[in-house]
Image (cartoon, rainbow, N blue to C red):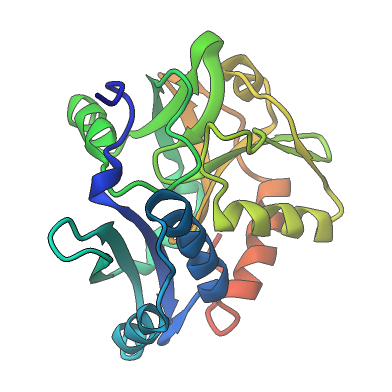
Length: 252
């Protein structure tokens, strides 16, 4: 029997893409991560048809998200594919500081691991107990910060951008890598090291980075107010947005 905080692998793994004017952002990186997961978990190879299907479904989308889920087919073998699309409110992509996120702690000993599990029951149960709009912040024992339910976590300390290490307890997001590259391009030092709740409380800014919303400023954790994003976070967000959405006006 799986531990209570471990997702059920039989429900598969997924990737969520931002779609801008028919273009799937970071397509190759997402498919590479998806292919690595299905190979490790299910001993299967990602078929060329998956790429063709997601590209076809995204072609007529102006701004939206596309989610593809692959799961083991218990009856016929191989993998089943499910693709779901939805429009996205432009104000939620690289949101302004006025839309900063409110988070609450969710203790998950050992974290959720390095795969993007389709089984989101643990997250859903937590969200059902939170106030509307509150985002679960997944922490390990001792207040060690791992990730948010939909994004990786970053803290700005002066001219350094810090994020928890990809040590198997968290999902190393596609946006995570790009944010570190953007920070470097902005003259900041990207650093992977352990972060605690107290570290976030003392940081200049705290940011979330995900594949659909881009960079989101974090306003508070369990009611504790955080530093206002008005410096490095703005520069990093602008740099990342230029790469993802060059034809759209920067809003962050």
